[in-house]
Image 1: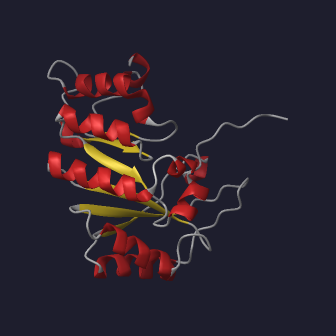
Image 2: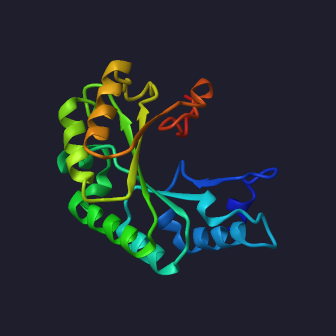
Length: 205
C-alpha cells in the first residue's frame, strides 16, 4: 500500500489505478490504498475521482460491488469477439466475453455507476467496421457505459500500427449510432515511450 501511495505527488484531483499490473490481482492492498486516498485525513479525493482499471477479473469485480464504493470502473476490452480477444488478452480464456458482460451488467445494476470500456484500435486487427458493429451490438445491453477509443501507439517489438484517422472516426460513428457514447482519446507520453500500451521493461544487450 505504501508503494502505491508514494507515487502520488502534489495535490492531484484524480487518481487512476492503471498501467503495468492488474489492480484486482492485488485487491486488498489496492482497496486499502483507495480508502486512504479517499479519506478526510489523507488526500481527500472523492471516490468518483478515483478510477480502477481491470482486464476483466470477474471475482475482483464482484468483490468490488460489495464494497459499495463509488469509484469509477474501467474495463480493458480491445475486442468484441472471443477468439480475437483471447489472442490479444489471454485472460479471456478464463473470463470470456459473455461472462464478463454479465459481470459488468451486475456491477452497473448494483452500484448505479457507469462503466468505461477501453478499446485500443490496431490497424488490420480490430479497427474494421465489422469489429465496430460487433462492439456496438455487444454493449447495447450494458448501460450506462461509454467507450474510450485509443489509437494504438507504436511498439517496435510488435510492429503494431494505428488505423487512419478516417477509419477511427467511422468506428466511433458506428458506436454512436448504436447508442454507445464513444470518445477518441488523445495520446500522451509517446515521446518517452510511456503512452498507452508502451510501458515495458527493456534489457540491455
